[in-house]
Length: 190
Image (cartoon, rainbow, N blue to C red; front, side):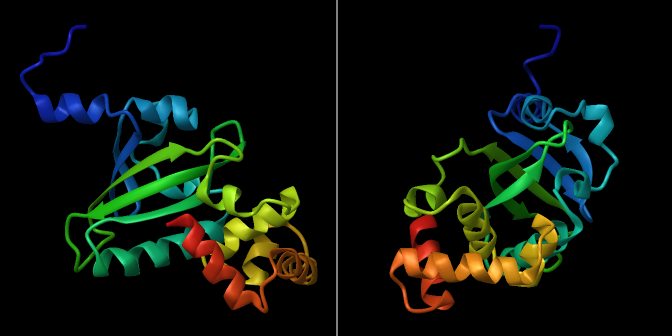
């Protein structure tokens, strides 16, 4: 290894165990080496690009970004589970954690880490037992605060289809309404 071991901060960032990004106004300034194996992109292909490139769709990018901005103003570290997109187009479930260097303007400069969650091992998956694969996918969006219309856009289906799945989920989970279902899902993801 040709690197100097005297610059520990650079060394720690470069070799962090999770995919780590430094963002300014949602543009990737720097990416750790783990980003290549997690997302499939070469560092040079991502640095200088919008993080939008790593989201499955515009809706995901906007909704999750707005939620993260609000949460990072209120607390030091924001954590969630969300869908992200690899270079090959594969959409994967990830744990994301971010911290703003300026809580007054969380987008100005932030550090984010991402870790893939294996199918069936995430907090949401474990809480959903008998739900179908599509219902579990919808549940993950519901936990992240998406509306039926936003979920429909993200999944390329009709809002009515999402509503039918939501009704089935309410029945299967033995809850009275959507709010109770989301509350139960959120408790399961903490």
